[in-house]
Amino acid sequence: FSPSKKVSIERYYPTMTPEELRALKIPIDVNAALFLWVTAPKLVEGLELLKSWGFQYKTNAVWDKDCIGMGYWFLGQHELLLVGTKGIFKPPKAKWRVASVYIENTRIHAKKPDYFRDIITRAYPRWNKLELFARDKHPGWDIWGNEVDNDIELV
Image (cartoon, rainbow, N blue to C red):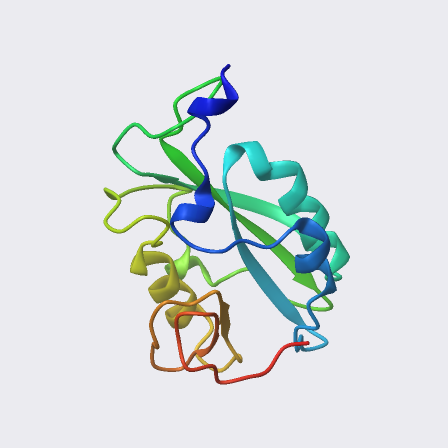
């Protein structure tokens, strides 16, 4: 490939290195679940991040973006939502379990479907919820990111 044709994600938003992400001091309950978005090329880094924050990988879901994106080996059409747990955290009750593949067209670059947040909210109504790198505030969720007024401070 030609480096001059390389598309930089930095033109959309600032990014952090894996080391910077691992260094974030996130307030995590003793018993918790982590839902972590990763792209296919960053799967290994995502699994390493999940582990570094003290979570054990459980499963993943796929967001089929219903459109062809960028890529070197394959033109990416999906993102993965990794699920990890810490301590005692049970899967959702049967009525809240959904298919592992969800199809919704992309809207704004990197904006994730509200569908997954809604599923988590309904399945775990009494648990604390934090969305990192949030773009919007949602009822029942604390948020942190460079595009919002943060509910928490991270070091």
